Length: 433
Image (cartoon, rainbow, N blue to C red):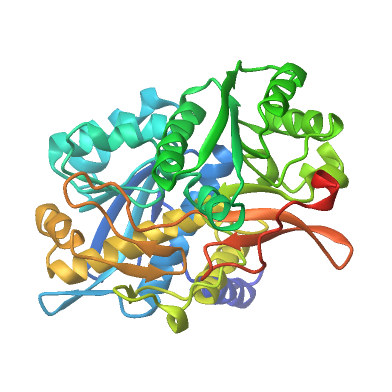
């Protein structure tokens, strides 16, 4: 290659790199340009192992929000502008990796703040490190209430806790079905038991009539006895489930046995795109599920509820940043669309940014105290924490439901009203006729 050709090649490479809106990683580092004042955020995230799908979503959702803030000038603290810098490591979905990596983030990387790992189990492992070093951590993927019942002072929650997963579904039942008789049928596993413990309290507080309450074991495939017992009890509403396999078998059995149900809402299974294929379209229509977020939500600066203040990017602005990452950033390539794991991680960045601005400080104690007074409305919905525990009390789960739209099964949002894209389908004829 001639000298001129080599120079031309180098210039082209420099131009291409300049056009990429991210500083590529050194290890797991994403940062603004050299020389800028930075606020360093540290996290571990599952880029490999059992949580790798959720982990890539969460990472890219957080980066999308970070990029939006940096493009809009960053954060001002005491008259000085700062850009966000994210430093992250792959925890391999292994809790044994988490504590040493968070210690490294604090001691060696000198981060100002932390994002928790994905999942309740990994967040449980990380929280004591944040507490030991008194560095504020935001939990975007740990739904377990128990995390926030340990007396920790340096962790706050972004997503709705497990105990409130069926809040929206039961509110629909209260409003739409005066003669509701509810059957709770759910997997005997830590997460679903915690969810249903909360559902039982919500049902009691709403004055709803629960006529049947029964667990099933992990891996169970025969639900005929449970369904028959619930039918005999007169139940016309089904709440429960666990994971995909058991959930779709429960629904298939209930439909095949002719259980006349006015409303069905179960965990996990209906949220999967292949749910109608698994149970059949006739059984799928009318089945609902709780979800932290859905891409069709209508949260915007135009419909901010009383007592809340809009903060952060609009949904479209955040989606634009997310989509840009999937084209240009290595650890985000291959993602076709954001899932709720991405949205809740992006919302964690918004809550942190607004806490820093409110505190006008980079001190974890100051920011944690300022967060107690935040009531934000974001592309993820409402955000507000309990001052004492840090548990999320503002965010509402959306309720999604399979309905026929243009002669095709489609997931629509039926709750809450400010996010809904359709009215709830009650007593669908394929179930109640």
